[in-house]
Image 1 (cartoon, helix red, strand yellow):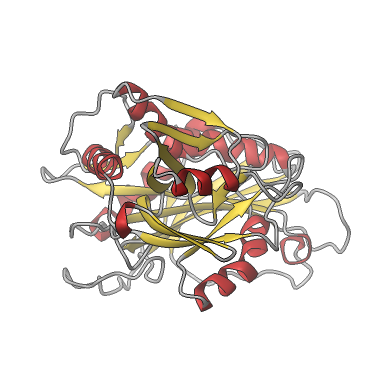
Image 2: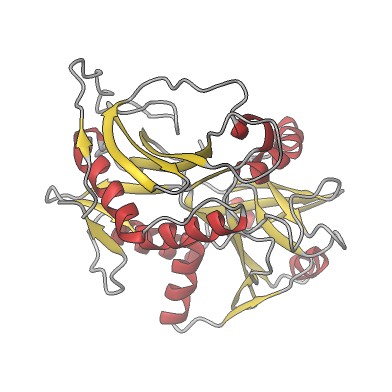
Length: 356
């Protein structure tokens, strides 16, 4: 059991009203978790303190070389008052894979889970109960050595902050419009595309601005070598239902292994739906659209959960999916995943972890 010291706030913030629409990631709870790493000492001084500003040297390595990682997961309040987190072990596992890729020291998985439970329990009164809302949980690690040279840091800070949030996309479960990016690239195999690091997201901003200016919600990335094979959307993995078969790009070293992606694959196979993880080109998708076999498109991610896609724009080609509406599988997946997350459906997979 992780030894955590507590310093609780003496000036609690006002919580959002029950009918607050809760824009994603804009409100933060009363407390945060912090733990330090020092070479030779390991991870130490776990503590929960009031949410506060941080002070670092301008020479802090994270500002110059971007040695940092983050994760994202959610906590929910059930109808009977329990607090649940959805598959936190998968996030912890992925976090340590990211740490390994960018030379951040590994974290003990039990300590990581203890930290998540402790901070969520401390601020569980902040978990919103309105449909479509949750408590977004953001663990992250930054390199803190004050040094202007390229090497792994000798010191790090691990933090967890919490944000009561609404739906990631303003469209909610209404289908989103996706821009297929064929000019810029996000990642290539051998790089950091499969790691959860800020560099992957800043690389996407230019294209995201371009897409938003054209009226599209997100960007669908193609591979960085041939610019033809589909990889992922900026904040989601992507799925297609083509002639009855559920198809998603296989993990190839440049695609983030999403927790919701893994959950959706489990469910589809459990429902005896044909599933293929493979390389799939944008030309194949366009051909399926032309011959009428492109039946559904949806994205998966912690923030968005299940997000139906109603339109894809690839160059001059506009592909309308389901006449811009939601498909049967997308709806069923959304109902099932959220049902498990909220404790409304039985969890036969041991995916939820109760915070006590």
